[in-house]
Image 1: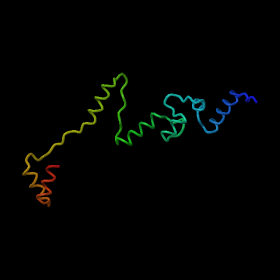
Image 2: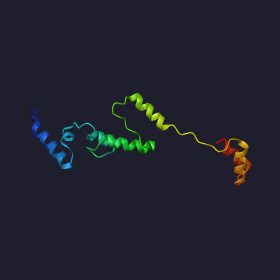
Image 3: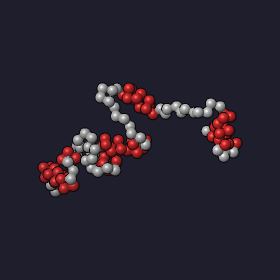
Image 4: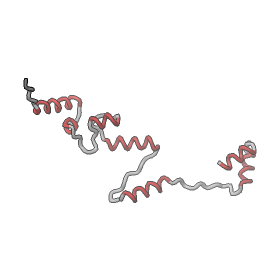
Length: 125
């Protein structure tokens, strides 16, 4: 008994037609999604709709994870300069304390109604 010969053209047409019904692009249907476009496996892995913009999804996820907007790399900016700019933007500004001595700070907190122990805890935190 011989096997039935596969009809590759018909399989390809069915694949394209099924993808069109589902609303996928032709590139995704062929199995080679465009650059930045989520293919079927990638979409399943990332939990996003098929054909969606992967870079946009990752950018939103970074904001959710890190809790802030990550600046993009400027055109012509090398990876090292970008990394340096990121670390500079993450540094917190130094606070200006109006208390220069521990005694003044403790007295002001005691005046606000804290105990001496609580005031010292705030000074060292």
